[in-house]
Length: 166
Image (cartoon, rainbow, N blue to C red):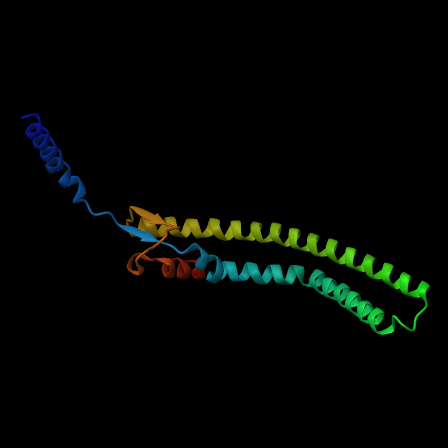
């Protein structure tokens, strides 16, 4: 008897909850990686960073070339140069390598800081656009990360177009 009462209660609860399940949710998905890669503001930010860091990148390339040239010189002339000259050149090479590594580390750190600043601005603009789309098209939920999203709910293209218009 107790088992049949439990089944009746479970059935009644299921019947009551069915109308709530029947409500349609309007859900969408935005591929944020694609937005960061393809959106007009993201492309502009990338070009801005490339321009901003071009001189430092060239300086790094120059120091790397100096080190390669000095290494090559030492390998080719190691037999013909004096011991003192060889030691001086090796010290010079070690100093060049240390400077290169320091410059490279600082370059990467500064570039990462600036990239994060620029991407934060792109993300902020993207979120505003997503919110506008959500309100205009009456979405209940828009996801930015998912293991899987059916292409029919992907509104990334709308977001990219809206960002291009701004």
